[in-house]
Amino acid sequence: MSMQQFTVPLSKLIGKLNIGVVYMPEESGEILISSADINRPGLQLVGFFEYFDNKRIQLMGKSEMTFLSQQSPEVQEQALEKFFAATPVAVIISRNFSPTELMLEKAKKYKVPVLVTPEATSNFASALNAMLNIELAPRVTRHGVLVEVYGEGVLLLGDSGVGKSETAIELVKRGHRLIADDAVEIRRVSSKTLVGSSPENIRHFLELRGIGIINVRRIFGIGSVKVTENIDMLINLEIWNQSKVYDRMGMENEFTDILGISVPSLTIPVKPGRNLAIIIEVAAMNNRQKKMGYNAAHELLERLGMGDDIPAGSPQKKADQFDFF
Image (cartoon, rainbow, N blue to C red; front, top):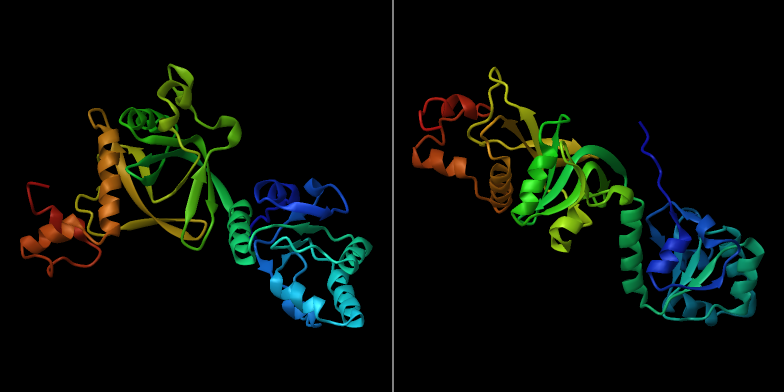
């Protein structure tokens, strides 16, 4: 199944990255950027277009502008004619270099936007690439609640009515922060990182059955909410099933695939008397410990002298031999 292609209007980049407009053939909001990659067109200025992608923003810095200035008018004419005839989506010139009259002539001929920025080329390229990675990231929306607990982004999933929102409000009362309730937009911003946020129209609102809709930011203050957070772990809440065997040791990590990234996951059974907020706090701290290389179950089994006796994939069998689990 092909992944949906996202775009970002050029006007949004202009507004957020201190970019000046020299020439714009149409409304900048109508020009859509679909590639997160950036190209430095040095090879294209000497005539190599075999792997040229005109969907990428073309960034010209001191090297490209100096190279052009040192060429004869005939060579400049030929190089810029071929370059702009390839109709790149936009050309940005860094370090406040001004485009030459010949560049503007070719840009207007082929209707290519020309922009300028005072930033150094490398710094601007990093900022632009970071923004494009976020705006164009593959994304999916999950029904759940995203909270930050002790710096860990915890995504709570489960059937409707299992207690996700009630648990989230208890966590907020305990000093943690809400990112999204009901609908969590998840973006893959890199090969290792998932970032969750809330749709803007329902941001910081939360539904509690019996009470209705509340505004968490208004009730608990600005420190109780956050706009985005990395997703570090996933917790499935489900009604306690007496016939199901739940993990009691935590020897092996379970993972859930989201947008091609494996996220550590737990299944926590829900029944009256269980304080889910405290359990999730401990789960978040334990997840951080595991990332730092410490696993309490491994240490316990080593103390009992049983580390070598546990069959791979069956920690529960050995755990059931002890009354204190």
